[in-house]
Picture 1 (cartoon, rainbow, N blue to C red):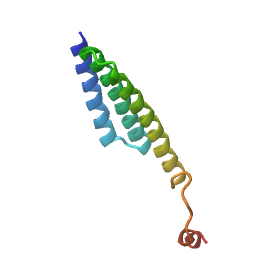
Picture 2: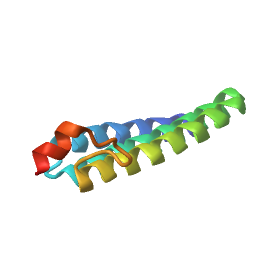
Picture 3: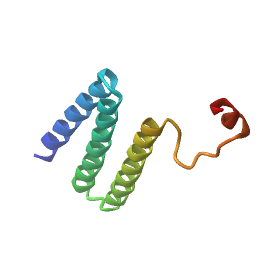
Picture 4: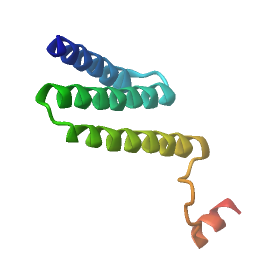
Length: 97
């Protein structure tokens, strides 16, 4: 049963990669990458249960946090055009006028 679940998760991960590569907009691609990260967390959790390794759940939680923060950072970058908290240099001030 859990092997079938693992296979289904892998199939949805492949579909997410296809959407990330073919997505019509940037936001579709970011959403697909977020979906891939979520499915990775789910797959690691299922594998932790299958192999009886509860320490894998800590890795899954850490990856979920990294995925969440990474998606927020990418969306912030695409919204503003520069990373949040970026240091403004003298040259960048002269370019803007």
